[in-house]
Image (cartoon, rainbow, N blue to C red; front, side, top):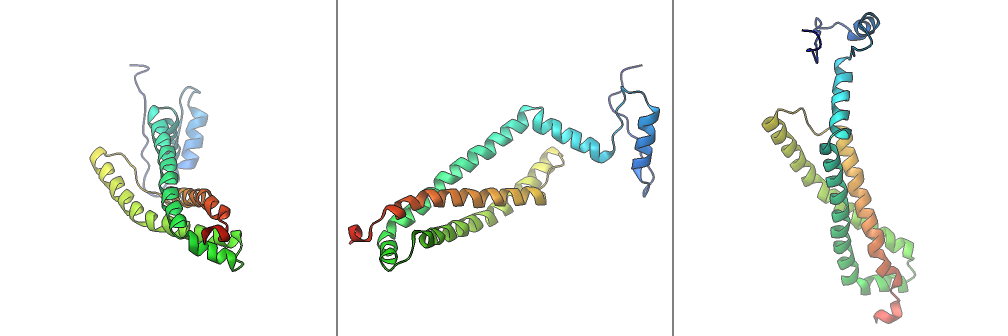
Length: 178
């Protein structure tokens, strides 16, 4: 009966460009019928699940919490390293190295931590995406954009931690260390 159809699919022959047909169908069908290409339908569904449901919020919250926890953990690592080598840093300061140079050293260590943490985490994430996709039959996978975003977040997280950890280094007076 009328009103019972939610989704209809038009399958085209391989190699046929769907755009002209989509435009023609939009012109012919009434306004209450939405005509979408496959890509538009996928985008609409992804937007719905990311923005229109609690799932998107929960994933976003998880990313935010992971980012904050990551900052704290990396901060503790870098702060401990700076504290353990405070005498060496103070010696470099006494020799004339600037705080900016020493900040660069800590940032290099932060970048190294980001890279060394990202590599195994990326491999584990790809495995978990595959396991989840196979278990749920949902079309999820690690995309290039997502991988770059996570790498950017990891580097940012480590740089923020390094900037916080280096405060102790700036306050270190070479005369007080010895």
